[in-house]
Length: 419
Ligand SMILES: *Cc1c(COP(=O)(O)O)cnc(C)c1O
Image 1 (cartoon, rainbow, N blue to C red):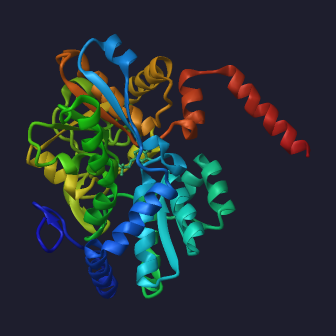
Image 2 (cartoon, protein in one colour; image 1 turned 135 degrees about the horizontal axis):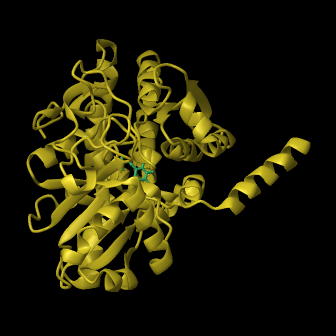
């Protein structure tokens, strides 16, 4: 990365003039915190005491045997407090907010996972919290909205544009423009203007550092390959960046193949994987949106397209500039997994290993499963399980089709309407 926050031709900082002072303050505080051993100690303690780190690296003997290829290990970010890797980032930025003396955080959320993580850290650190969420997402993900409100956060429905994540992001930036002297914008993934991509990736890199140590303990070598799902790119950056200069370690990102290659049916920005996506070429193209330069799904006029994934967390039009650059330099290989393959992988992990991954993480599993049988048995492969799947009960139930579940829902509804 160069000093202006560019990774190759991606990244940078495309923000309104009025935010410049706040952004520079954030950059300065972040640099000082990185060099401050008391901040690093506090960060490490909070990761242990609030989120339960380190998370384990779990061998999957049954699944490895079943697939008959490389040995499979799962990095268990699902065991973080709040059930996903998002906790690593909110703890880091939360402690930075305290250090800057600000009293309020602003966050955007799609499915609500980052909204909940932000509300949790705000409650713990005694900060006010405003979460912007698309009105459509609020309808689809009401249980998460419920928890945010119970935790004391204010949830603001966004009714502009498509009423989803990227509209929420625009609205959060607007709030920050007005409130930056007293508020911090807590971005949930390694996107946005500099220094956010770098900062979020750094707070998440605890995943990769632990994985490195645990690989040595478990199989006395570095992994041959690391798989991670790619939405905005933060869990992938987190597990992969510590391996970046270990060139023998293959890095593979898995994005949302959705239900087809038409605009609005997928979130395939980078991969050029004929088998899985039937796509003739990379579907995204270079552009500038939401404060940074990267690869976006857009039409010829540069209008951002709609996206779809069975996993709400992968349903984003852009991607981290760090990921776009690594892919362009061929350090990272990007593939895509379609919704139906993701459900298959999800079920395989449940039945054979007793682990319920988030549907986002099940993309990484599906991508790995499509390649593991061809890998020699001596290889060791790590898959990042970015989160747990309890939150996906509604999506999974409708994908696998369980009429009892539908009956339960309507009974529950009847009862609560009566009381
Ligand atoms: C949000 C989320 C993702 C996608 O975000 P990244 O920034 O790409 O990591 C993946 N998995 C889970 C469980 C999530 O909650």
